[in-house]
Image (cartoon, rainbow, N blue to C red; front, side, top):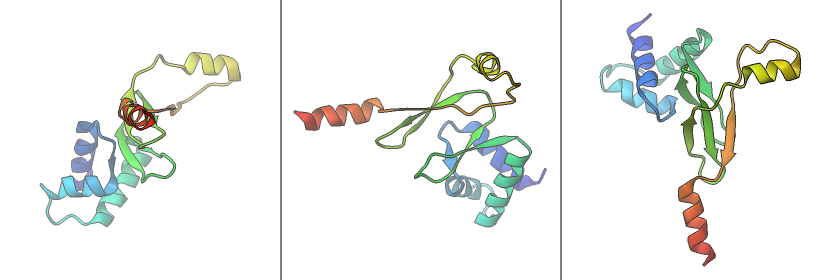
Length: 125
């Protein structure tokens, strides 16, 4: 693994912020000042293909990158905030319902976050 790929992998695995490629680029630039954005994109693509990190797509937002560790996501429908949540594993229930083996799934639960609810309640008064 190249020093850039390892650096990107370390950044993604250490973060709980679901960083964009540009955010990863700026973080990596702190320790690898000669890195270019294309290198970050190429390495992100390779790390995803190797299943060392995962890409999280939320419509209307830039792609974000996340660690592989099993977890799901809460997404605020108002502000787009992405939050980790650990729910019970649904694999068995999905396999039973589908009658097929499930290799993986990516669950995104949409809701309105507490901050957006407070803002909405404040403007409703």
